[in-house]
Length: 137
Image (cartoon, rainbow, N blue to C red; front, side):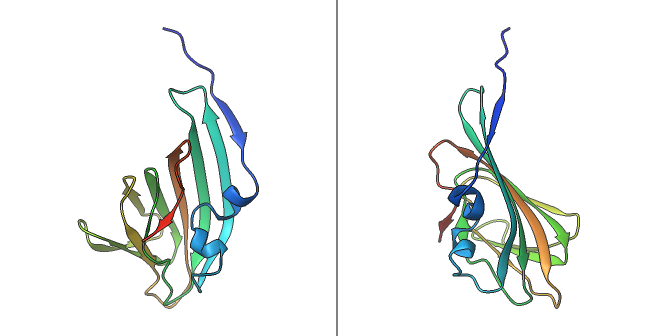
């Protein structure tokens, strides 16, 4: 069995700066701050995959707004509590530091901070080549 080498290219500029939430980058979501953004392209696989990882902070009382991603992802809470509102099942659930939320591509969701202190979380997802990282809903 032949294996393909994996090549990773780091992305910079507009994709890395605002890929998780274009709404955040454009200032359309007050109270949500993109603290770090990392992106890479993985080749040498059956298809090219864009890997995105961001760190966001949500101010108390703020929400990201409903959106979906073009690929599967996971969010891990670093501090505070993030309430995830998902259209359809599983509904609404709060996640605290160390807990993770995993979702399939196309899952429409909204992240809110209903607490009294800022909530910080990482967001990582895998995007097939040419797929939009985020679409507001």
